Amino acid sequence: MDPQHSEVDSLPFTKQMRKATRDVHNISDALINAKLGIALSDSGVWAEGLLVFYDIFRYLEEALDRLSDSLVGELDVEGMRRRSAFEADLGFYLGADWQRTHEPRPAVRGYLSHLEQLEEEQPHLLMAYIYHLYMGMLSGGQVLRRKRQLVGKLFGGGGESDTAGNAVTYYGSHEIRQLKTRLAAAMNAAAHQLDDVTRSQLIAESRQVFVRNNEIVATVQGANRVLVQKLTNLAVVCGILAFAYWLLFM
Image (tube, rainbow, N blue to C red):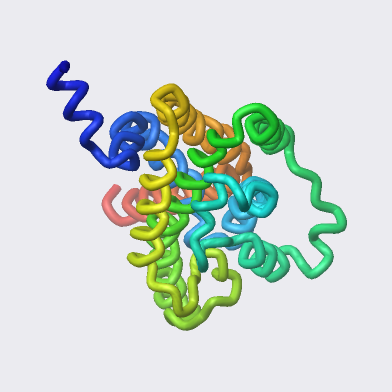
């Protein structure tokens, strides 16, 4: 037996997924930090970021219901679902009637079409999206939550108990570490019951998760607006300082 192949097989499947997606995952993290990191001080950008992911999480949770009796349903860890939290936050930022006029943007519709095709033809591959997106919310989502709380404190916002507009990153009495452990264990247990071909396809689809996430994050236009405004403000400040220096020393 190939020693290298044996070493890979001995790794938990979640670690195999992480190893296979490390490069594209890093790109995705950088894009999300560049786009949604600006949302730390701009609720409009935060709301737009929530909006592009809302339909994806909604679809996945509906799929979990439809596939509850399959291996896919094994990933439905109690306490991890986010749809109602997304809806609460979007109602907070966009108003109670936001769903009446909501229409997924083209990139999101393309993402949803792909998920629909997978559910119809290879439903087990949906596990890549469920695992990575919910684990991302449990990990990266918590980082953004803490940063937003810090910015809120610095500028007179709420403290750590303030969940208004931040429900999507709040898990109540559920411990984050425990949810992550249970989700990883469920993913590993499900993968153990799949054949080699399906496991390989699942790892390949894991890369597509981040590619498709990047496509919808790139459509968050508010982040571009805020960045331009901040650069403009910086240019104005630099101009004022340069003029003051000229008055004083020239």
